[in-house]
Length: 404
Image (tube, rainbow, N blue to C red; front, side, top):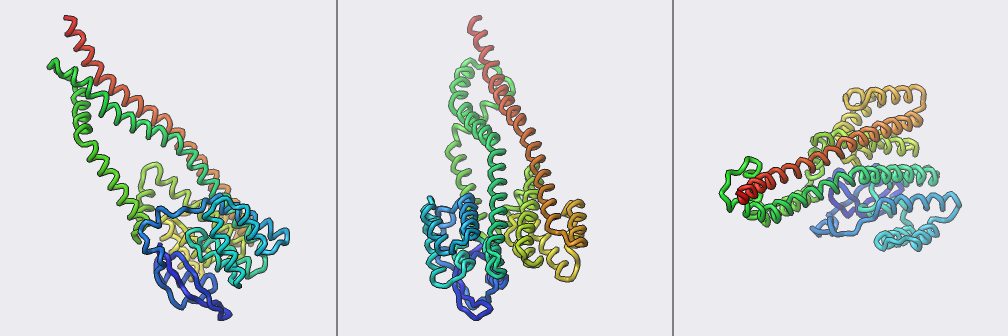
């Protein structure tokens, strides 16, 4: 994605300008049209020229965004004016970066700019999805329900991120411990013992010869190895974040990983239905929802699928039939959407689909973690057993030789 500084006018002919994230100028024009604006001109934002801004700019936490919209909804329900609400939220905000952004939004609103347009001036914080909820509230006059749906969506997103981090915490710690142990043993302690054993010119077993080769390689090329790994990681990181094809390649790699790939695809599908449900309950049109969810999806495969679904719906097909033709969505999901379309109960059926997919994903994550933990212990135990057998077996033979 690229940041564009744009100028546009709305349906009433009012001029507006701001910054928005888009893959191209055509995509930028499409996003603005969805928000009720017509593009006049666009140019690359100055922040795009800063190569390191993607990595070193402080970002606003998801929990801060969730709390911001939650408090804004509470103030709106209580009948407090938007200007006063923003001033109060600025005063209680602990993040200096977010406080500065809220002050700029408040200044824009005092100049007569709508809240949705003021949010879109900060695309690194407020994406098109968040702005769409606000636009619906501004158009329908039902601002509080739109904020409530947005808060529920952000709360679910924050909860999922927390669950994934909690599930991966133990494997990550064990993996780092294993890597550090391997490097320290093979590069520091093992060479000292092996030099003592090799001084007796004994015939070494295969496991010891392999260990000698690994220790020699690490002691000779460890700095070069760290340089190559660090350089490759930096290049990969820059490619994923700065190259136009980076996000799609990142998604393809995630989806191709064994065990993790299917979980990633199901998480993307769950994210789609959570967002679809929230946007539908807010009163947004199906085609616009498909546009927004396609642009916001981090799954390259699901992006293509949603593009096909959108084309089928534009041709007049029902949503359930468009989903069925993709051969991606579960049959129970398609049946529930079909029933919802026939009985005009799509909103509660979408909520049931969310619960079903959420439960299914949580069960698979728990099953994956239950298999991963003993596997990590088995790997560590096997590695330690190999070290013991490769070092202490010839060491024992050396001690026997010395006694004789």
